View 1 (cartoon, rainbow, N blue to C red):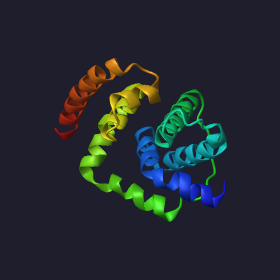
View 2 (cartoon, rainbow, N blue to C red):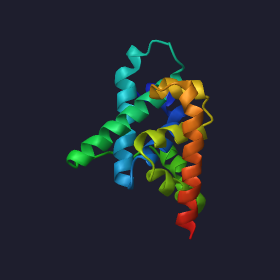
View 3 (tube, rainbow, N blue to C red):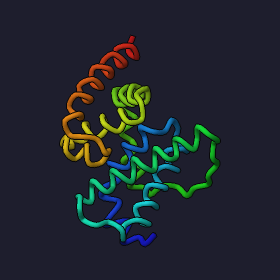
View 4 (spheres, helix red, strand yellow):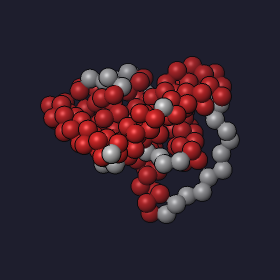
Length: 163
């Protein structure tokens, strides 16, 4: 992958990729594998980007698809990867996980179903119901109801984690 493409088309969206990958992994090694695979898939598919949606929406779609695919593979048979270290700028963005309240939130999010994780992450990123529907292939009308239910469930999960 060219460093120019990475710098201009992926790195500005590293925060999005990090949050999604963190929500679908339980350890640093898996996180790094997911992150690198998302970046690789963005690079591989960027020529097929048809501008029917925003570049950010494209990034979300790829990140969720990669994470869900890896998650399914791992449940069948764990994969072993060797990886290069992540760039320093990306590693500094990961430090937000050191905040205890954020760690609790991620613990609670990890207890949600795969699709509910995606919904709440997009909601936390302040995406509109229409954009969330486009990314996840759901109807916009259904998104608001599901988000309300997810928030209620997260409140319960967070309360149980704190006690």
